[in-house]
Length: 391
Image 1 (cartoon, rainbow, N blue to C red):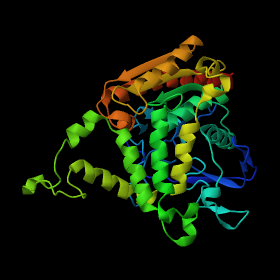
Image 2 (spheres, helix red, strand yellow):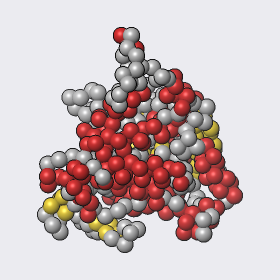
Image 3 (cartoon, one colour):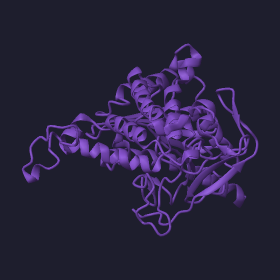
Image 4 (tube, one colour):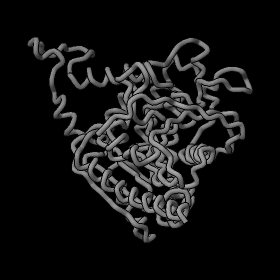
């Protein structure tokens, strides 16, 4: 398997306002994106990768001068990898409201001349999909060979199959859910409250005060990170190890760091607070909470998926308690009720929710095998085009 090597982000500006589910709209916005591979003659080999909470358009490859800046799914996307860029034209798009280049709360609100801050409109998964469809239109892509995502990205892929059933042949949903449980909404709210109650949040206008609500972001990340790991994974990595056990230290009998797990979570929180935007965190977690395609159909997921036409790969991980396999099986059952073609994989991996980002041979082989099928369809289309041109 090869590396994509150096890649470059691109920006696409949209003047026409985008109507949002909230009733608001946003105009004169920019979406950041990256592409890998080559779009074929009949434009049948395009794959859209949708990102999760703290990721971006930078899916694979690295940036010039920084070989450590690998994309967040670099193990999945590239030459010879499961999503093979020698075959597919892969697109990663940074969602509206993010803090990685697409228009978001830290950008200037044209109505005020100041950063949007908390005034940035609330966005939903469906709003992101609508914006992605506009970018695809600009690129001349009428139909994707596949739309794929993990976690929140999987919600977007599922929404694509509902909102634009004729614009994708395959929908790949990994470690995701048709809606959040009450427990998940509760975790998200605790994380948001950590930010909202940080004195440096300043009602969302902290940019003007040259401060960052780091403590709130740190706690929010710590809460979230706990939900991404399984109990077994944490036990194996950290157990009840003391931070300075090698030095023979015992409990410190205070409220600082005694255990390795405490040190790890604070490190993750500190790192997150250095690069992520607080308003973006609020927006994205709320988008997670609001996603529920069955809501418009009296709570029936079967009815929500009745108009879909794609073929599906649904994958889950046994130790993922944030988006458990039971939630993936709900999607599978509703798709089967609608007589859709579904491949389901439940992978026995110890890493919890984060497993969808990691290198597990069984998981990678499942995705690779599925994309072989996707490629066969593309190749058939290419052959048909060549035959027409020869005639």
